[in-house]
Length: 199
Length: 307
Image (tube, rainbow over all chains, first blue to last red; front, top):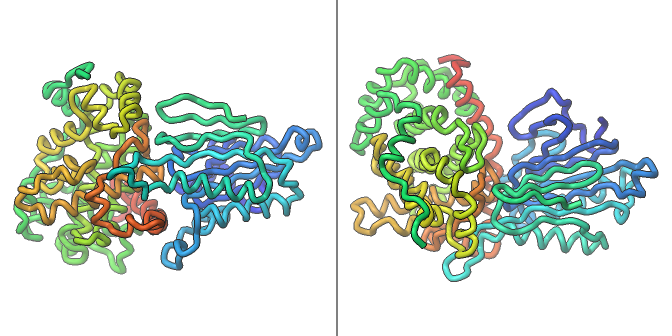
């Protein structure tokens, strides 16, 4: 397997943050971006709650042309402006993680740029969004802990700004999700709930 | 609606009997810590009664997680270097590892996840304890948070059996999962945790952390130590919320929790538009330290490293 943009550690690697590979799946953790240029690459995100993942999978036309480019980012917060500081930017685990990729406003442009730099045409991908869970409101409708819904709004706004339609999504609610991608599709398993085929 | 079942004290005792026994050294430490003026020397004397615990504490002191410049050889040195409360929180972290590490199937937690959630919440609580309008002791907040979900160990089988009803009730009424547990099972993992905390003779502030972690404002204002205990329990409550929002060790109860408005007010930045983002960003930056601590505790309890 060759992964463009980022040199993912080999399957034997295992750290609690990067996770490396589990079988054929690459476990993607917060602040991580991966772009794969070969077929049969599978991504997995475990127990996703308020965070959000954006997945770009090749369309059938791309696959038939032999272009198996795919990518994913896993973000925790919507906007880095005034939030990302020198003090909280210490999370550098490996080359696939960057502190700014914890933020939707930095991670999505980086993903788009990475896909284009590998020859991808953004509108040819199938775009999938998952995550954005949040606790119940409190204190008469107080919603200050609505990071989940603001993550989703930020992603949707950025993708719309680039004219990229979302073809599958599992967002909101208050349940954790585990997401599996394969070249042919995406499945989301809600913890304590149903399994949903998004694509 | 009447409960579908009524869990009894006998049921809880039966579940508690299946857990690893609390070591004698821990029980003695618990009793000692009921006295807030317990001396460092007396704590050191208790620890010395258990050579295995002493070795594990020293391994942890000398691990990368604490980054001390010179090697610690005795409990007395450890107490002098890190302070009594830090040593006590280490002891509880080590003890929690064996108890919280097993699968908790009723809550959808695989082996290791309850401990990972406990430890992450503990580091978060220690950080948040310093940020509150009324700051509290970070080490105590750490220990309260690591123990906060012990009730899930007792209620797991019952929740697994009745999960669809509990979940449906929480969603329908917009109530916390624990409140739905109480409605369906007759008691919640909060009350089960309270039972276990008493059985283990935990010091009172830690019992309160377990009992009020979901609703600090329910702590009676008549509590003689209310001024200290309310912010302590608040740090645990907020740490629990952010641990869930970060998705660490989260189970089938998900984010079915109602934040406590009074607790949120103790961290005023949360009332601003992006205040929660700032807090979350700071907490996520602690991840490498949490990974180091998790690794160090695992090695210390497996006999790796220098005592």
